[in-house]
Length: 258
Image 1 (cartoon, helix red, strand yellow):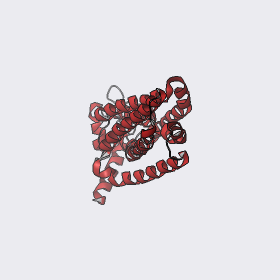
Image 2 (cartoon, one colour):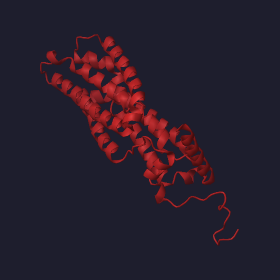
Image 3 (cartoon, helix red, strand yellow):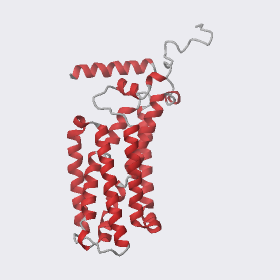
Image 4 (cartoon, one colour):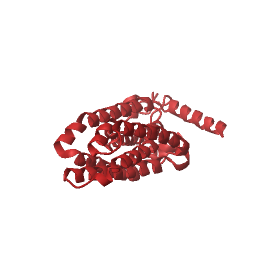
């Protein structure tokens, strides 16, 4: 019930106050280090799976693909699909869980970038692609839908759940800054990569990160659905650390005297 959840949150906050330590010391705990690793990992994968490249360069990609559809119209379709899928994600995230949405999202996104890369590879090698000009549109729409269901919103939700209360504000800020830095790297160097290694290899590079992300989600990312703050911290290894000093015992010296 709501009252039970509020009681659990109050107990957690009271425990946090009792165990308050300096910020740098709080970052040395196992849950903090693991939480930061997971938070930075999902933010990196969100960007290096190619989401912003697909969104920002949608018009260019459709133009290069030779699709019969107007590039501007294809961009509008991608945007509409993104809005709808993000809304659907809010309805199902607490039913299916964070991990299954992340996993299904990254797998399908990798398949989509693989197909897009394959299309451009065939075009670059002068295969007849006139009959499969729909591949970029379909792949992009599916990519955006699955991204909006999983790796779009879930990382932001996850960083609000995995960090210990003592570092939550600072750690979330670090994760957000990292996300924007990764987004800058991808959008800044996408065109340069296309020029250097061709557009198909660029999309296959996104596929590589999606494959790596699949293993990251399976092996590293915990399921946080329906779990309290304390339960999540236990999953992240809170029991492996010594009990942090509290206000009550912080004044005890090394000889055991007050």
